[in-house]
Image (cartoon, rainbow over all chains, first blue to last red; front, side):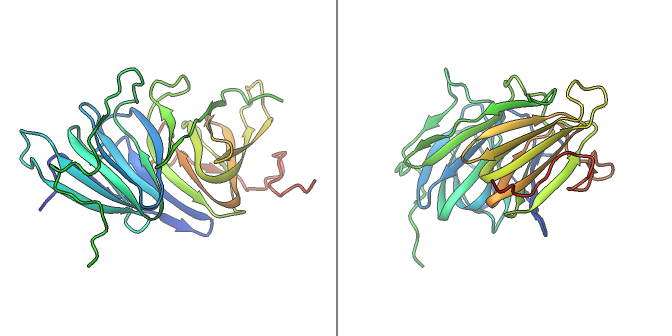
Length: 152
Length: 152
């Protein structure tokens, strides 16, 4: 199964030296960039799931700068060629990738192994009076995804 | 001594809950925001000094998302009301502050106590062919600042 329609990935490239490392996350001249709403940090404690979230207007750009996260996406759009499909990613220090998530694609993440530090650079600033933030239960039965570790 | 001319601070506000925490860094409707060039991560190993850097065009917006950093600024502008002045900050988890640094204000930082994870949201994307990046030695004698720990 391929990427959900409108989801885009940017492989990030840490540049290490004797002092530490540097890693570009999102640039205004990146092909997948649209506009800047804000940048914020979200930290998730080990084994916690933050899910499901979706937006009607906002596009998210997620990257993990410390730790690892399990990220899942679910396409809620009735008119999408990938309606009902799920994508799963394991991103972070071991696999530095920026994920662009369009509106109406539900998303969630779980910190795995240790706490995960995630940067989001959405297209809109958070509106306290009228937030473009919608939630479904993390274990919503109509979403074909299970956040538990699958021993195998 | 007050702030160097054009330097601005935004006190950041971590919002903790049972799952982790969230912290807005820079919004497009913040008073100190100008424009989005890119967002990148720079990690500095404990006790390493990354200094001095300055830009001719770019304004930087620095915030530490993990660990603590000692940040120093030096005003190189001949026509500035604070010419030759130095500012020092200790920012990070214990003191979450975003620092706006105008062009021609030299800046550097040192990770203290542990590795420091810093986010920069400059007004320009990094130009590989013609970088707006200038350097002075970390211990340049004409800058009245000493990066060593001052036992006291």
